[in-house]
Length: 79
Image (cartoon, rainbow, N blue to C red; front, top):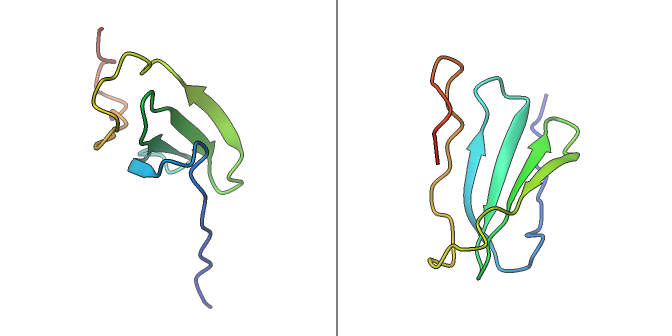
């Protein structure tokens, strides 16, 4: 039994800054590089795009370099 590798291209074309896998392993997030980097959340294993988070429009850094899904027991961060 072998492993299957699937490569996803950057949606915006600027590259990937970070990837995070949900603790339940049913979703993963792909954080892009760029002026207003988006975060794309995909369902796994279908690789269907679930959600696009575009709330980083004020990000001045040009990339997201770390991503994390909180554990179920952790409260959601407050902005």
